[in-house]
Image (cartoon, rainbow, N blue to C red; front, top):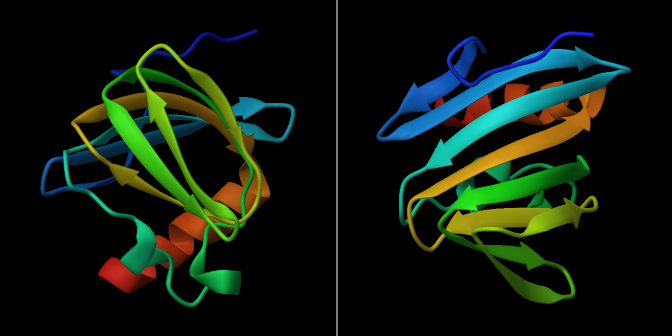
Length: 121
């Protein structure tokens, strides 16, 4: 078994205050340490995916801040101290500076990250 810290996890994306680190954790799952500055809306980077929403499921814990997550069936809000599961079909927006730890299936997560990088490149 291997433990992971934010500092030891490779940076996958950064810029404009965004700090997104991810590492394969085993069991076909990836851990991500994500900092989103207030006002970050992932929806534009998800355009072109099915429903223009992230289709990768995520299990996570909100360490700091508040998030709004848009889904086809409506918005949900999350705040520091809450654990969550987001099924396929979501787009998060940081209402405050946000820090989360998230676990996601590696193959699906990599596909979304590749799409987001292509949108922002």
